[in-house]
Image (cartoon, rainbow, N blue to C red; front, side, top):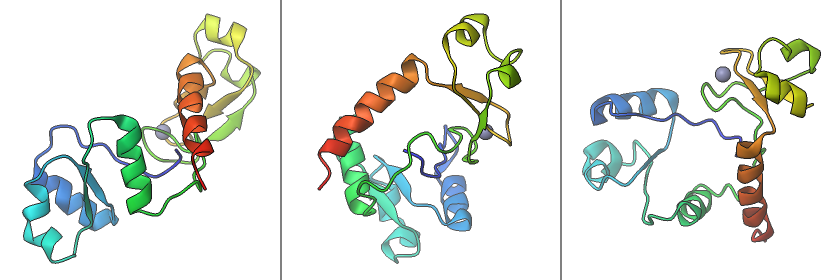
Amino acid sequence: MGYDARFFNGSNDSDMIAIALAEGRVILTRDTQIVKRRVVTSGQLNVILIQSDRPELQRQQVTDALNLNCRFRPFAICLECNQPLLERSKQQVKDLVPPYVFKTQSQYMECPACHRIYWRGTHWQAMTRNLEQYMTSCP
Ligand SMILES: [Zn+2]
């Protein structure tokens, strides 16, 4: 959706909380223990306790809670490091993408930080369909 986000994979809660505080992040979690911490109950750290198992309802809860509505810019930043993506020509990525991708895709984006190349393949199409459904439900 184009929002700066960071995924914590198995790191301990205290590390995650320290980083969230330092970077001014909101923690999205299904862990009921985190919301009981003093740093959360005191209002110092904003945590959203995700209620549903269903991704579309989880997204709805987060966009409602943070008042994000429809003001998102899908695919604008790198999924890995949150840097704004830059457009690249087909020739610029010739040796950087698989031959089949080069043959079938014409639009490419590159992350200036990690140099990951993005294109509008099947994963992009599936995510776009998903977001379009969401956008039509916006006021
Ligand atoms: Zn990147």
